[in-house]
Image (tube, rainbow, N blue to C red; front, side, top):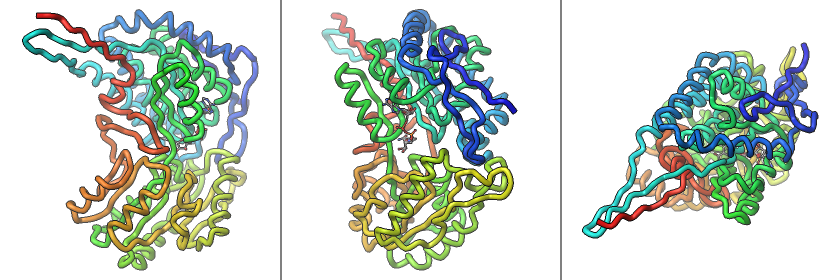
Length: 482
Ligand code: NAD
């Protein structure tokens, strides 16, 4: 079978990169190249920005309900092709098809619908006293840049594009070059749905070429980025020089904290397992540090390991697979290196730790068995640095204070989950831990109205709900004397 050649979306047309060059796109489950992605550069970004600028006034002038209609139409198109897109997302990323069907693609639909509805329901602000009426306009910024990572490709891409478009901006967006496929499908669907040309532009390619050109382009007014803390730091620095607005969603080293009084029903234990290994641990929200109150440590460990050992690693196309392949060979090697380092730091391997070689078509894929370690000091690299793979460390703690100190003992602060029946304790701990998101007796239960994001090295700004609408608009206060 020939390779599929992807294209950029510029000015409403599917376009080849100016360079004429392409990057290989791999199927992680087989380790084989199956598509070619445009290796675009600053020249393509410049054209995209120009068309986005040209399209901006008319798009901003549409009533919110009209922009919402466009977003709903795109959502309808994705929904109609849910199975096909889920298959493509799974092939591109290595994630189990069941996850793509249940989470990734439905969430892309939900993102578009949520912001379509949000923009028609967003109340304005006014402040009145005896002297004047103040009202605040929230105007679109113009052209904005959206840059997203490979772990939840269409899910995170639409999470940025939807609020940017809903608020009346035009967009130049770059998906990860590692998982560009469903962004290309989105481009095709945008054309089919009659989204006005130039409103959404998608430029494929490498971070330092395309991403950097977006970040540095003077006509791009704001940057919404999700990815690693290292890239985020670069973007923050470059954007500061031009006083651009930035929203940065970055890495995490999240704790799941299990108190002795937790309801450890089978269902809750399943959620705790899922919080470590869902999407092969390649979710920024995954709890890679599992803190367990010492009095229940041994019993919890036994039950937890039974469940982890029962997880099936295999062909992402197989609906029986719980874990698929890691996204790329370099990432596979990085995670295997982290496991080796954990051993060198004194970690005891409780399960996994090895590459998995499934039979058949996946024999050359990048699979790793779910891995659990214990006995590592709190301040070692394994317990402080993001691994972003199927690796969880078990850490005993003795008291609430102890748990809080361990949880806060990294540079990251994205998400934490607490497991306890004591709701007063849950409130206390939630207040004391330094994370942007705290789940109590649940994990990754998302309400799109809530502020989403991290503190410390995990994030700057919040996405979701009104926060996203505010980010993509500029407030202008008008004061009228009475
Ligand atoms: P990455 O930083 O390597 O890449 C993210 C995006 O930035 C890609 O599109 C990439 O091409 C682009 N990029 C790279 N260099 C760039 C540059 N110099 N200028 C502009 N753009 C550039 O991250 P990744 O490896 O794709 O994703 C994994 C990371 O994303 C993990 O750290 C994970 O925790 C994080 N993540 C965070 C969240 C969150 O919501 N906080 C969600 C998902 C993933």
